[in-house]
Image 1 (cartoon, rainbow, N blue to C red):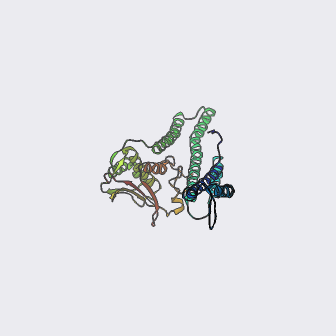
Image 2: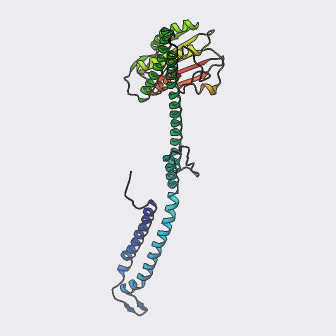
Length: 360
């Protein structure tokens, strides 16, 4: 935005200091006049003890020195005001410089203002915190865009390869080709749907009502029962009523994604358990699965987009697109809740969703 050039803050403050000195000097002279000189006679007096000056005599004697003192005060006010204004505005100069660097694309810049806490340092600390959050968010968005581009390119490249092979081999089984193309297409559709769901959760604005997490958990378990049977994993659903306030379809996707993740990455020798309960003002959904012991550093990254278990490249036919836990995080956050992932001491993962309870 282009603005007309005005006086700098330093010049404005300096003129304010000079004006303050001028007003203070004028007030002092006024007080002298009102409470001293006005009581002096207009004509000189000659008494037996000597000569008493008149009001005019005192004014002539006082005007010159008073004027010189006022000029000196104004000069000292200008110099001192310029210096003090510079000292006071130095933190703003540092903030302005940091803002310009950030605007030029250097989000790693920080003010890191030294000194004791005051209004300027509080502003600088808030600015540094804001830049840190923006840098982190931009980094996540860049990684997300790169991963999404890679994921979207993969099914297209596979499709092109299959079609090239089919062209070079006219005798290729058409049914087998169509089956493979359908599978690749389904994977691409799932990825796009996952991205759309993630965007929808981030935007908010969805219809909300009272939702019982225990019913959503039962529906998710019933939907994924064939997958559990195919993998030989026992599904255990138990818990009490836990009513939250939000979107039934989105929170149902939370339960479905968590349960699917547990079935895919869990150990077939241990059951996958889903429990719900109410804890004070929160509705709780917990999904646990067995498996190998997980590194906490790895667990902290599982909710990032396109992360799949211990390794990003690992994929089975039952896995979707690496967006499951990222979608859960976005949906839970949009509902004012929190997703916590923790490695179990015996191995495996515990996912805990905490949402504001309905009616709390």
